[in-house]
Image 1 (spheres, one colour):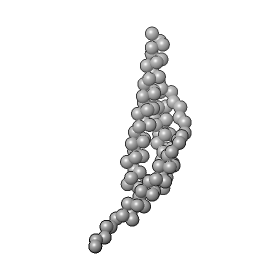
Image 2 (cartoon, rainbow, N blue to C red):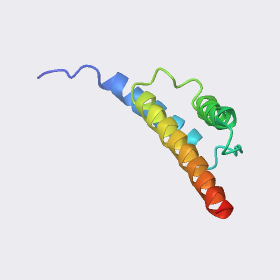
Image 3 (spheres, one colour):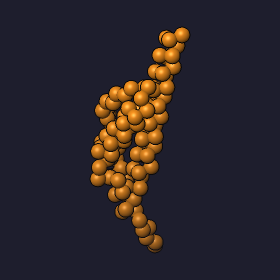
Length: 96
């Protein structure tokens, strides 16, 4: 018979990950920004990152959650940048 080590830690990590993901479920919050103001866009990105960090507070060291959180932040960052670009393009088309 052999003993598999590390399953307790993995099980604990999975349980903690499930709790953290539960915290991220639903609406995180709302941000607004001026699509023509880079500082406003950066502040919106920082606000979303902060909201995510608040939700997963206590789970930062979980090896399962860390990459998911970073991916989530990148996804929201890109969404904000895309919305700002679309808004700028829309306002430019109205000017023509």
